[in-house]
Image (cartoon, rainbow, N blue to C red; front, side, top):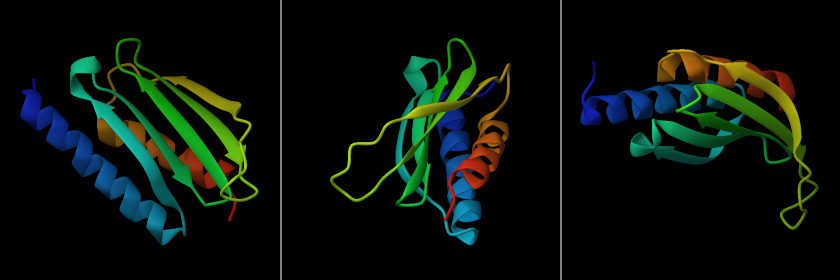
Length: 110
């Protein structure tokens, strides 16, 4: 079992790898929040400036939900629509972020 520092480092290393893979496909991570003390829960917003996916991982329930929105411009108020919900069981950060990558590529058009 990983200690606090190791688990946090594993999360951010996996996040950096995700950001690098998304950059290769002209996508970006726009927002991220991680809470080790909240059962490892995290949220992330990624995609393109116009099409984004918001992910919420509930560490207690081990569930990942995803919502998509289209932004007209920087002042627009997005209308988020649920696009996926997945139980992740004991998936590590790298496994969870592989699913995030697939959903961003699928739902965040250029």
